Each structure stands twice: as structure tokens, then as C-alpha cells.
Length: 503
Image (cartoon, rainbow, N blue to C red):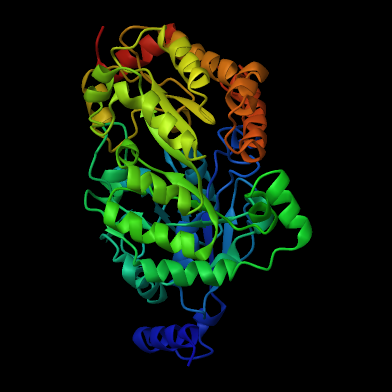
């Protein structure tokens, strides 16, 4: 008996459903909501070449769903919601800045008779708010409660809240990649090798959702999945050998689509697990990129193994160039004095550095924007994302700024890291808004791109040049006053007074 048939039979027996019963025709929508704005969806990398990612959390939920249900996975950033299609159950997920649109989708589906369940970081932080628009809310990881939800749904007795526990990653099946529309995403694959974070930065919701304890998937399970996805490396033809010799050894891997994005928050949280996974990547003969902390750059043998495994880039959260600011956000692995040397060590191994910076912390003045742009260009970061500090619900940052009465926007659409939602200490909201954009303009100006990507010694320009051209286009959207109007200080002060009762 196949695994799918066994799941089908087991579910029927457990829920008391006979073959041919009513649930044989039950349709489930698994929806990854977007902002609701086509233009905003194009910004921050959603539709960039080589950097578009599917909602694999929903593909995993699909793999845990018995085959007697008809499943449709919908990525709203790329396709419309198919309203009016007789859907009986919908699970909708989204980030905080997606929530107004999530609620609109949920309300409309419920008006058509669909039972709606909401999940994700924001729903976990504010479940009662979510339940104003849904039949049920999932707090935490959905995998551990999905079977219970389907059982309750089949009996017509959905609970209001389901508390998802930390998932045992060793027991998860392979995700339903067949449900992902490949034309929407980068020419490669995506995988998750671990969950959990022990650092706990004050602005991040990962720890609140996935927990402090690091959990890794078994290396052999990852090997099996990757070999099923990529298969053995095909024989190299003369023309591919010529490209590898005269252009770059990675070119054939892109032609063969042997490219993998590792979506872990920090791939190197556990060095022993990371080493085992790196050996798997090396054996599978692929090229990959993912996220890592600065701890990676303090271990020469780990850096060597990263290079040998086919790593073409790591996304590192620099966050700030001030150690005082780093300490205030509790990002203890970061040492600003080591930044330049860490970048050099990665570049020496032909590994690109995709840096992330956050602006708007209490110690920062308007001088921070030029400083970040100059640092990114001088140290030749392959990409550099400058994002506005955002007090997301469920994070220590939100509690801190809320208690100080500094939040002036309660519109969740503004919580997108491109909008200002609170009063900074040493600059105005307008200065923060336009300052962040000035950094983008300098980093992704043609001069900045040329100096970072094309001047020798180069690090994989065939990959990072098109990515940077994509971000150049995104910069025009991000800087659009029509799409992202700057905050109006007078209205912001009124909003704060109304919410705090201060005169």
C-alpha cells in the first residue's frame, strides 16, 4: 500500500468516513496571502529573478492532508484568489503587513460559506484579532494540529484556537512540490533543514513562533529529498564544459537548475548539524545559498566546508554598524569590528555576502544612511537590504515602543519594513522614511552595482548582476511616493495622543 493510500485509509477509519462519503469532494484552499497591492508585491524581492520563493509551509501542510481532500495551493502574489469555486475549507497565512488583505480574503470566503482558518506569526501574536475574521486560529506550528483540525472539521466542530507545538522535524514527510507553480519562482528549489533560534533579537518574531530550542532535520532525510528533487548530476557535454572553463564552473549548474535556497533562519545554529548537512549538499553536487550568523566566519574549517559544499552566498544580518546598537537589540553573535574581515573571509572562498541592515534604532541619527551605503559599497556586499525598524506584534520591540507611547500607526499594512510606524528618538519619521530610501538609491545606483559586482576580484557576477538589476527596479518602486507615502508628522502626533490619552 502506498503512503498516500495508507494516509487516506487511516483518516477515513479514524474519522468514521466511508469511502465515497461527503468529504471525498471537499476542496481545501491553502492560501499564501500578499499585500493586496500588485505594485507593492513587486518590491522587496517577491518577483525578482533568482529570488522568488514559494510558500513551502503550505506545501508541507498539503503533504499532511489525506488524499480524499482536493487541495489547491494559491500564492496570491502571483495569482488571484478563485472566489466562488465551492471551497469548503481554507487555511490562510500571511505576515503582519499582509493581514488587512488576509482579513479581506477571509471575510469574502466566509460569506461564500467557506470555513476559514488563519495562521502565521501575526495570528500567533494576536489570535483574538484574527478570530474576528475566521472560524479558527492556529497559534504556532500548524503541522502538529493539522490532523486534529481536519478531524474536527469533518465532524462540524472546529475549535476557536489550536495550539501548535514544536514539530518533530524527523517525522515530516516531503512537501508537495507538485502543487507549486514553478513559473512563479526562481529556477531552483527550496528546503528547510532546521527551526528555532536561541538568539532572540528584540525585533524578530522567529523565537516567539518557532521557539528557542534548535531543531534539525535528519541529514539522511534531506539527502533523500534532494536526490528525489535533483537526481544524480547529468553527464557534462562539451558545450557545458566549455562554459565552465571559460566563464565560470557554476554556469552548468544554473543551466541544469541545480540551485537550492535554504530558508532556515540561521543555517549554522548547530555546527555539528550544519557540517552534516553541508556534506549532504556536497555529495548531491548542487549550488546553494541561505542565511547564517557571524559565528560562521569565526571557524575556518566551516568556511572551507561551506565553499566545498557549493555555497554561492549567505545572507547575514549585519543590522547595524554600531556595537552599542547591536548590544541593545541583543544580537550577541555580531561584533561590528569584525564585519570587514568576515566579508573578506567569505569573498576569499568565492561566497557572496547578502547583508541586511535595519535603521531607526534609538541611538541612530540621519548620518546612519550614508554610512551604511558607503560600507556596503566599500566592502562590496553582493546585495544590501536596508529596512526600517518595525515593532511587530509579539516581539519585545513592540512591547517596548508601545509602553513608551511612540507607535502612531495601527494600520498593519504599514508594518512592511518600508514604512515608519513609530517616532524614532534622534530623527523625524520623515527623515527615517527618506533616509532608508537614500541608502537603497546609492547602493543600487549603476555606480554602486558596478563597484560591488563587476570590479575585480568578482564574486559570481553572473548570479549577482541580474539580482542587482532586479533590485534597481525595485528601488524605483520603494522610492515611489505614490506607493509608499511618507508619514505626516502632525497626523502621527494626533494618532499617538488618541491612543495614549496624552494631551
